Image 1 (cartoon, helix red, strand yellow):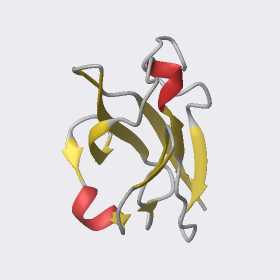
Image 2: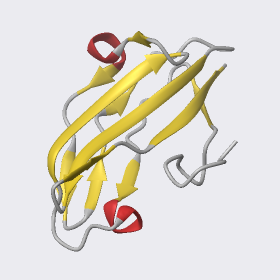
Image 3: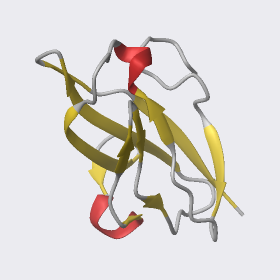
Image 4: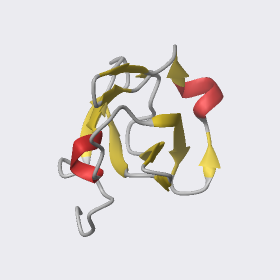
Length: 104
């Protein structure tokens, strides 16, 4: 499914309904040479329903150029989710994304 430079190379990934997973994004892959700013993380059921408030736990962290997302939690088996990580590098806002398939 990774058909563009914006989509995570590992996409889609599988995550069990009881798993709690933080995903990492190396912003250097998107041109960052200094720490990114304006970081925001969103989780959608499908491509349109924002479920960030209920299915993301905690906050992101930044170490060097690597962003770790909040924990992705409580996914429904058989549903497809879209995780978006937005950040600013060199004055440009970029938003790579990846798909997560909920599993048992």
